[in-house]
Amino acid sequence: MIQDYEKLVEKISKISGKEEQEITGLVDAKRDKLSGLISREGAAQIVANELGINFDKEQVKIDEIMKGQKNVNTVGKIIKLFPVNNFEKNGRKGKVVNFIVADETGNIRTVLWDANHIKLIENSEIKEGDVVEISNGRLRESELHLSSFSDIKKSDKNIEDVEEDISNEQVFIKDSDVGKNLKTRAVIVQIFDPKFFKVCPNCGKKVERAAEGYECKEHGKMEPKERALLSLVLDDGSDSIRAVMFSEQIEQLGINHNDLKPENFSGKRGEIEGGEFFFIGRVKQNKVFNNTEMLVNNVQEVDIDKLIEELESNEK
Ligand SMILES: [Zn+2]
Image 1 (cartoon, rainbow, N blue to C red):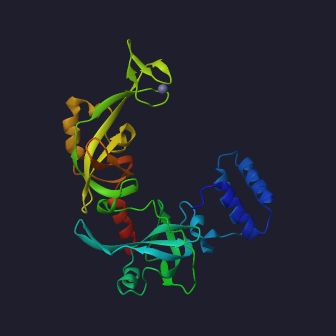
Image 2: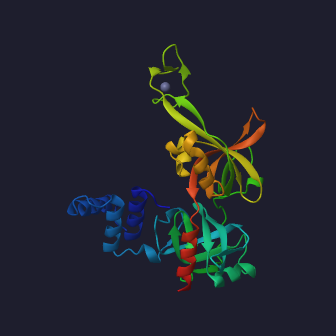
Image 3: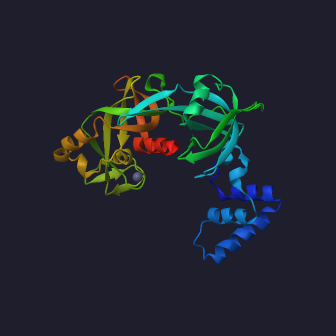
């Protein structure tokens, strides 16, 4: 994805045949005119429009797909195809297919919602290893979504060296490994009582009790900050795993510091247990308990409603 301004300028320069310097000059002029109310990226988009560049029609490399882009055209090789998923929500049935498409610059999870596209997969007309041409896809979050307005077809282009590293991809707990990253969509089946400890506000390291108050090895005496640690058990249907998380991730679960107090916690626990989230972290060996556990560094909500909304908009 094009996140940075420099790449955008480079691209506009390439298509328009103008020097990059000239493009940045135009962008700065545009921003001045708008009293700096617009981001550099936004101004660059306007400049591109004025130069008659339509990114919507252009075929892009995977790492050039822009944040929020609505008409993505790209070509890539399917390096991983996931099974067709049936789902039912509020009495509605639907199908969805995910695959990872890659070129030499990157890879991206692609989600098919349209029954005709899904049929191509079901009939093996499009399969893992095939190079496909995608038009009119839409970037949502960091995934490429294809609706009935989009198109996918087999391409006779040959793509050799593709970016195979899909470390941001979801894996099942049963396939997780010590020392590896894990992103799983899992249900919280158990939450243990929170534990608290004190850290130095300067470096975040655990502090020692001193004769008076607390002491950090590096920063000496200071007023410590209280941090919480929560252990839970996650289950994604393939297996379960013990997970630990600290204050920042606990907050991402919707539990604030006050909820963690013993008198409030049992009620909050009832709310959160059974909830489904994406958990992203690293699997490590816990030497004390001699088991594997996941150190969670990010929690994201599973937005089923958003997925359903997408599906419904495809049917109109
Ligand atoms: Zn310190």
